[in-house]
Length: 336
Image 1: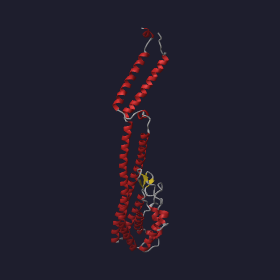
Image 2 (image 1 turned 60 degrees about the vertical axis):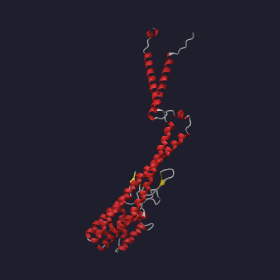
Image 3 (image 1 turned 120 degrees about the vertical axis):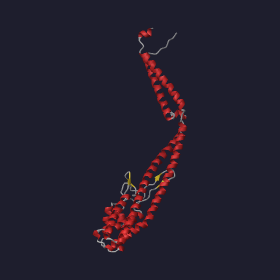
Image 4 (image 1 turned 135 degrees about the vertical axis):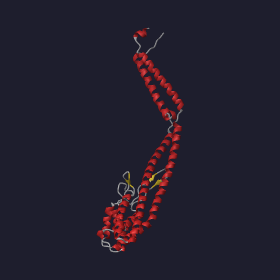
């Protein structure tokens, strides 16, 4: 009778190999129980990855769109906040300017002129707003402030109106600085790009461009009217009390008339926000559908995997028990 046997070294190797195989099976089953997906994707799909690749490619694209949507949401919210502040500041200022012009009191004119100077800087600050170091109103020049500082622009405007003694003269000087192509505003005031920023791709067929820039006509006019009121009380300009009163009154009237234009810009931005929200909902619904499809492809029976996991754990425990008993076996016990 032939008796086959294996040596101790071979036996030890076989035990270690069996232990490693069981551990691998246990980790795979733990993954399946935890995730609900097959651990061996190739075996589960029979080697056919075409449908899964399409689904994962689509999910990846939606993740890219989700990033663009979040960026667009953040920027439009910040822009909307800036426009709201500009409208509030200019509206409140217009009321004070008209009241001061009606009273004609020199001290009152000086006070509202100082208020206008603060308002001018506040408006400039809003138009220079940034989100994550990205300028909101600079067009394609994302890393550049939209405007020079309020102090710098007012200094240039003081030079522009110097020597003027009539409202018509002051208005003409301000019109030239703010509105003329190649004038002071375009060369020294506006620092951003005259090209709109790259539109954000929110889905396969929807792109949204945030094209509102600080060189927009309504912003120029708001700054122009506010600057007129701020310059009215400038002692270095030496404007007469009557001219100061006229400048303050004209500025207040202009700011009131500009409120509908500001409202239009706010409404336009609101439409953009609505499109962003619509695409966010659409993309989330599409993402959920794709996730369900992927789960259907990769999903396993959790009860079956849990049962197999219990069996593997029992086998590992039995293997450890046999290994321990074998390690304690003495020659005397073997001879018995």
